[in-house]
Length: 55
Image 1: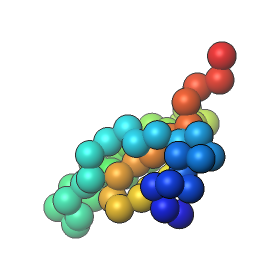
Image 2 (image 1 turned 60 degrees about the vertical axis):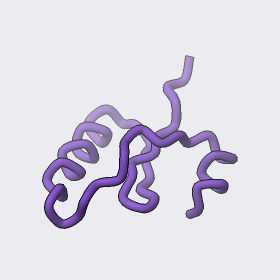
Image 3 (image 1 turned 45 degrees about the horizontal axis):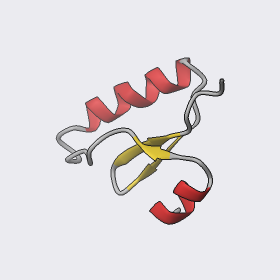
Image 4 (image 1 turned 90 degrees about the vertical axis):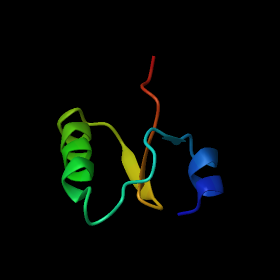
């Protein structure tokens, strides 16, 4: 998915790009937290993008 497509679907970047593989553990921690919170995320260019919380 491209940044433009993600933006159109309501996603927003929430991190700076991770330096893989050195920061893989940090990325995995974020993804695990998002999964626990049932928060929709995608990864684009080593950045985590999420949908905003519903009001």
